[in-house]
Length: 208
Ligand SMILES: Nc1nc2c(c(=O)[nH]1)N[C@H]1C(S)=C(S)[C@@H](COP(=O)(O)O)O[C@H]1N2
Ligand SMILES: [Mo]
Image (cartoon, rainbow, N blue to C red):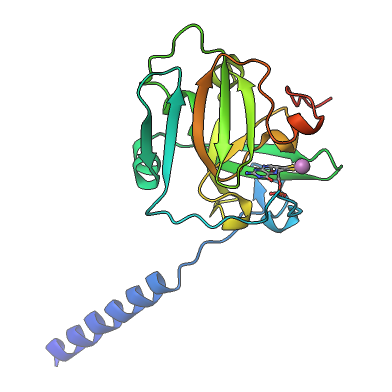
């Protein structure tokens, strides 16, 4: 009798736990530390070639240019290997709309901490899967805890929002927030013009 009761409880507990686990789902966070956030649905899709679909198993992030031998990292290698940070930052598109998002990712300076960066490398050029590019002074990326995000509002970046990685270019216009990053090139070309920069937008992209 007692054995039956025990078995019944054990089986019940097993199914209860199973159910709990199988029903867990990623939920978008809407508030953080008392601040209301925008939704990931509030972005206006206007990428130069539309959404890009990158396979996480094939993905490589290449580090190239003045640092010597090219290096590359896989998605899991980056996610499991680097400390992660969260911060609420607003993206302002030059077209007038904005989104306030909780970003989560790793620091640019942590990603490149093992690199031997020569003094001549004062510029960093980011390149993306859709052919987009944009550049920054190296010291902007190193001295401001700039994040490369893999999550927004607690959700993994969906393909249309830059999976696997988008740069959180704080204090700069949306066109500097490159999505679908595939390559980070160290350069000495301070006048490099990325996609929108070569079409008339300022290289620094600073917010007013
Ligand atoms: N690779 C890539 N990154 C990109 C873009 C793009 O076309 N391609 N557009 C930029 C612009 S203009 C903005 S405002 C932000 C946000 O664009 P979204 O709303 O289309 O996501 O992404 C930026 N990053
Ligand atoms: Mo934009």
